[in-house]
Image 1: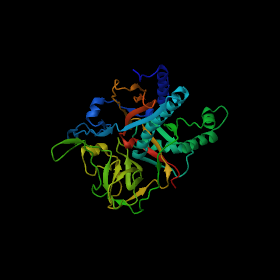
Image 2 (image 1 turned 45 degrees about the vertical axis):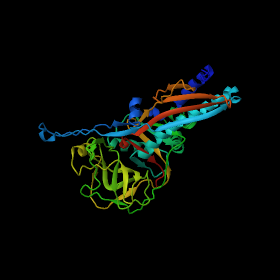
Image 3 (image 1 turned 180 degrees about the vertical axis):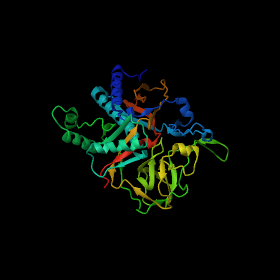
Image 4 (image 1 turned 60 degrees about the vertical axis):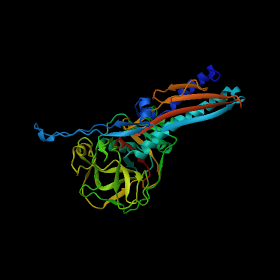
Length: 423
């Protein structure tokens, strides 16, 4: 065929794939789920993924009164990202193989960046564990605070990752380079010579050259929410039956709550509610620390969608008992909402591997329609497709590199954000 890739182009594609795979830093640290692409097309690229079960235990040998339903919660995952880098090369430009390699390198860099940014955005905007630090980044205690909030709420202590923006990462490296520097100290020397931090407080750390920036909260000081007698208390359900009798899955990561006002509140804001304390997800014991929440959307002048839902088990049920995530110290019709993002700052995300999941997608393109196609799959499951088509009228060759994928935060309570300089 006239549009077939040359041997030189195939070698370049292999180099492009290798560089693309190396650049997928964040996706290597997420869970992956392969889907049946025919089934995904029939379901509009949406699949429901299960969340972990949480069991409830009781004392004694006689458990007659304690048998109850076990509720399996799930979340919708969508293959919703279709990223492409197209370019054209003229017959003159094709004489320069170096030019072609540079364009391929730029394409792989951009697509890898798109995937990393998508993962970072999901973690940064939906992670509900919030750690505000009043000072600039610089000590072990900063990352250790993320370790503490995860441990207190029962998040597994393995496969934890933290992605820091460049300034905060270098602040951590500066602490290592100065506070612990001595001759022959490999950790200190790497921090001084390469700005390298590495494992800290149970997290593998990574430096990012991009990231979400969270604005200072503009919500009023007088914002309140009712916590009286089950008001705004959420009861998890696996499915819901419509008036027509149809049964459908329910996304239990989010809840619509009623507050006295949403003026100034925007998606991304982080907050606590007075006397609403986080509990350990397994033992249900209070941590003594206020539960942190994120605003997902503002729906009206008095309602907003938040994550995670407020599950106190005030309205008792098997599901509420199993998935309880907070407890109320003092109930009030006007419990104060306190925002944690007091100062605009870049977001540093941390997560457990099982919280974030990447779902590779695939294109089905005809191989006999005049365009030449090469495809390859990375270790992460992401498929990179390169296409080429020549136009005899203009003597120009069209190229395009494509990836298709989805990212889902299956459990916002196993991921969160670290904010510095929140005075």
